[in-house]
Length: 97
Image (cartoon, rainbow, N blue to C red; front, side):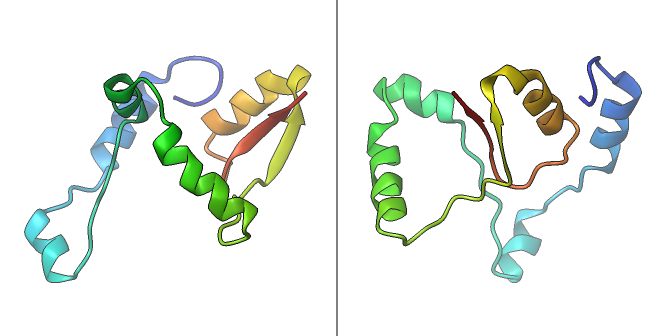
């Protein structure tokens, strides 16, 4: 979905051009495709703290740095949402209060 409305032709085009990954090809080149659903993890445990806490510690220690290309005031939430929908983001879009 891009813009403010559903784009059925655009969605179909994206689906048609999405690559298909074959497990044996990935294995032979020592690659992996991994996905997870944070909602499922949260529902199973009722919290994501056990996953978030190590990340928080690593960030505080400087071992990892989150990529935040843009921080917008909360009043510009619609602009932030549009920015994400249009696929122009790298990293996270942050809303500040």
